Length: 139
Length: 139
Image (cartoon, rainbow over all chains, first blue to last red; front, side, top):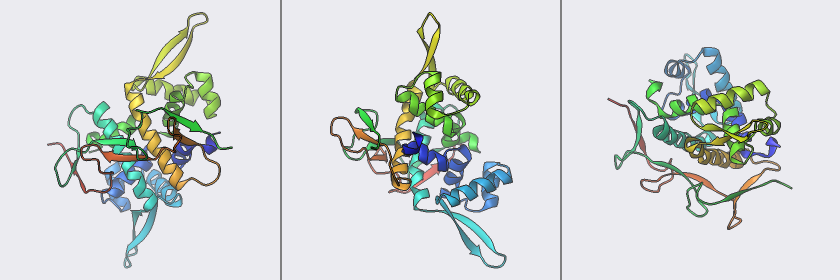
């Protein structure tokens, strides 16, 4: 049944902590293997595996930024960029439910105000969770 | 550094595929161990571990629904319910980027329209990704 579920399909590509943290870091400009390894403190073989998987799944792509010596970096594709707002929503959950002690914050650059992520149904503007939804299985 | 990151903090509680799929299923009324096991097709020891972890982290709580024989089910706490819109946003990513073939859809019960999840900054209404954000580290 899960083959029809868009949540399960998404999580099959990106459903683990390292993959999501890699997307977060690439978005923040840590595009090279060594930068990611240093920031995440992750074992090199795990990082290699997740980068290969995110690239195969089309969320990242490799780009050569130096010819001599040949050096590559990872950049977000459209699919990868589309996942970033989900990470922002996950940050919002963390502020609310794991917000104790010093914590980093996203602010709107123009206003300086703290970002308050909210998932809405853009068809009607209502926050998700405020109107009854129904799951429709395919025929 | 990641100790200050709300994304990393959240993913430390719920950052794996099974945990997120369990929250999805409990939200859909599959509150008992056997229902979850059957729907997810997950090994019992993995399911037990994830349920224990989600309960310890405060996203689920156990409730006894029968005294004789003693039977327990899992229900979402406030923290668990607050994660559901994130799953809806993840579904939105799946519709867009993994939407080929038969796929289940969430519709608004009242209007019958397909839900179109969008993460906005509720401080100003702008979709996340449309305005520059800045990450502020704690002092």
